Length: 228
Image 1: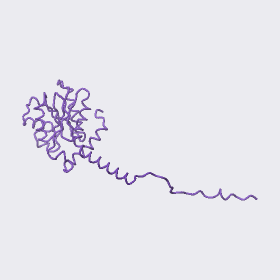
Image 2: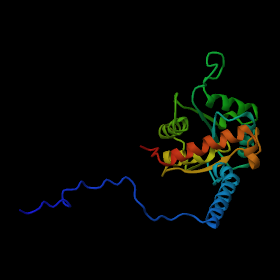
Image 3: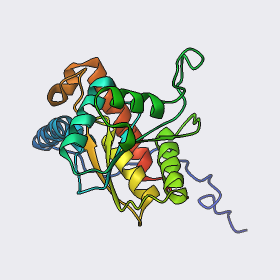
Image 4: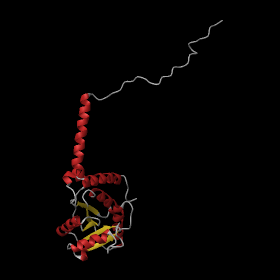
């Protein structure tokens, strides 16, 4: 009588771990990686603010000023308007976020225009372009309102320079270029900050908040089609 094959009737082995070969950094490799990372961080810290606070003006017919700027920044806008060959200066901005029922001017475009007038800009050269209330994407709302104003006016504008806050410049420039393209060329001028040193922004809490928030916002803006 043939014997049963006990070898084939054994239960299969269960293996929970296995041995495999893997690559890892040597001591020299770790030193090189850490050194390269430190150099990258130093480069980023010292170059991120100039990247965000870009100034790239063009020969323009008009200067467009974002109305929420500080008085110091508006003074800089007046200096730019006085030395440039601009025909007009536009102010943009939505409704004020606090004190709406207490102030004479109800939106930032009007507040900026009134301030510029006090600083010496002739009233006939001022154009107020208010934007509707927007919980988010307020720069988009202002740029869209400006485009709509141009579409209903007889003002033959071919180029503008956008005057805005320092680290906000790169993002505002991106949005305005997309909204106004291809009919109107857009340059940008970043105001110098008065509440922190842009060359050492990392030693100021205001500088850190501004740079970090604008870096995140600009990264987000890169992946959005603002004309959609």
